[in-house]
Amino acid sequence: MTDNGVVISTRELYDMIQEMARSLQRIEARLDQMEEKMESALTADERSREALNKAEDALELARKLEDQLIWMWRIIAGAIATGAIGALFLFAQKGIIGG
Image (cartoon, rainbow, N blue to C red):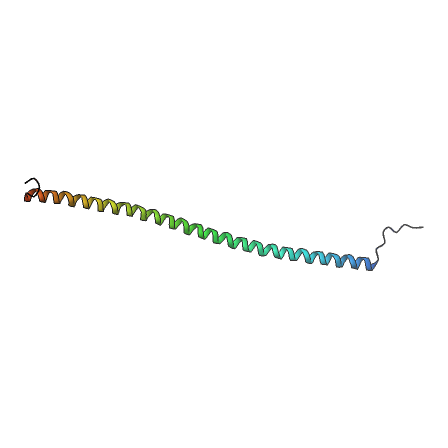
């Protein structure tokens, strides 16, 4: 008796090839899903970077406006103080204050 090893029928071979084809289709479908998710993640990353840049620009603008507002109040306070001092001198010259 000769030992021919393992004998696989053509039907078994066909069935295995079909199962491998189905497995390959499932793998390809999963890869397609992963690619879509990667594209979505990249888009979200890009949009978040744009939003961060806009937020940083807005923060810088707010800081500049805050500095300008502080200077405006200083100028207003200085103008009021200067006007009050000028009014005191005017009243002093006209003799309204102190008789």
